[in-house]
Length: 257
Length: 349
Image (tube, rainbow over all chains, first blue to last red; front, side, top):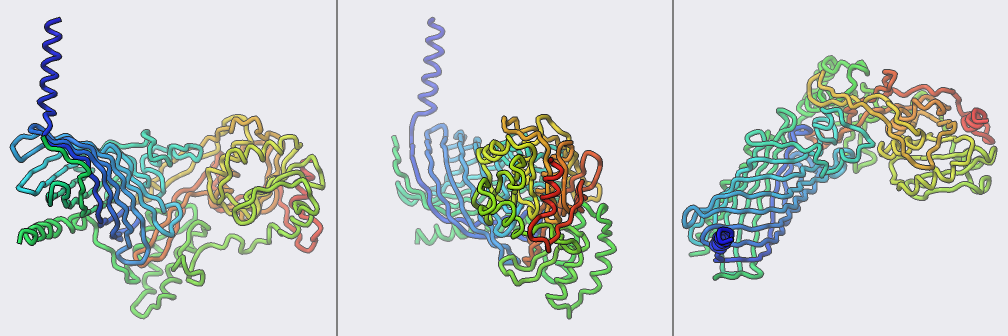
């Protein structure tokens, strides 16, 4: 009994120490974004355009770690670089992160994009009007603080995802290669049909994300984020897309002990 | 001063990273005529699924046509040259359109009806069979371009059911499908009019097909292009699963066909082809057995191509259409009857 008590006490003390609160904040982000896209399976023409960014999150930081959850959405309208056709892009994302402090101003850990839904709608197209990449990614993450700046770097390690369009048709490449195509199979079109998800690692599936945030005041900060993704489910026919965003963050509440 | 520094830091950061993804992208393609010609012929070579079946040698075609393009070639002339590639495929799913928003713009494709007589006359159909003045028992689902579905019995024989789906490019709910088949279940046979139905949603066509069987049926396979090489294909073997509905229709069915029976209608036809109680009456169908991909060329012209084809359980290629079991040609001069419907009724007696 005494042993059990000591173990419970040990964990309780550890947890209290781990979460010895320094700062916690609940915030909203709002700003603008710029995105680019190229799918070589269908064309080398790049699409670029501007749009809006919205985010909502909770962040907790103490002497030992930073952890938080973040929900963000980016909506842009991209135009083809060589003609006038456009595509609307929607990218909602739910993230969770935990980074351990290894120096006073340096944290390393992981970010998990629990759900990353990247969806495009091409104006004027038929079967190829909808394109989406749905999935989840585990990232190696680092944060470095310098004065009022906070720099972030994420490197995508593993992605578990489904691309909606294959080499020559609007169905996942593995659906077509495995001979699974069937109009009575509703799962083929579902973004959440895990049967057709692929697990990919770097370098075949390359993802990187950087960020820089400047603390303007206790309530306000301004941040820039960049996200790049490049992968190819058909060899030599890569999909590349990137998003830049610049946003203002307002801490709805921020408590420091 | 403080904010100036911040701005400089941010601008530096933006400058470093804002072009990074572009460094990893392929360069934008050229938009001159030769570059667009090469882009389109490469798309056809790599993506089109039936070059062999259609007997198209894309390399020969490319070599013959490329030399016709020079600095004096006008846009119209260039479109016509590129359109020759499209037309060589003899495929209603494969098209080239200059500007989709401009109905007067240039386009190239395959005319399904060329060389075939008309398969249906709407006035004859309405005035003698399904118009409310001659048939009070007809029911309709409004929507689409007029009606999504028309069904009931025929005044010529009240034991014969009639169902017309003018297009698969509509939404018909599961409840609505149940209602249609529930209304038809007491008839002794069904005339399923598929004329004018150029396609739409193959999943909807397959759902209708699933009402005409009570057991699984192997129907053939869809052969998809899965890579750029000439042998990069993969076959998806298809077995039609029955609807399981209490309103399934297992009595004799006559499907009326014409050249506009195309695409998703071909999906319906090959799905029910093995069912012995189902026969086709009318004209050769249009075909269009494959699935379609589409996109834009570097100059903004729209393209679509068949990137698969369906080969039925007997090994028949269906893309050029199939002859009906009972060939009948409509006589447009006799406005009192539709010979195709009359023959179908006769077969069901």
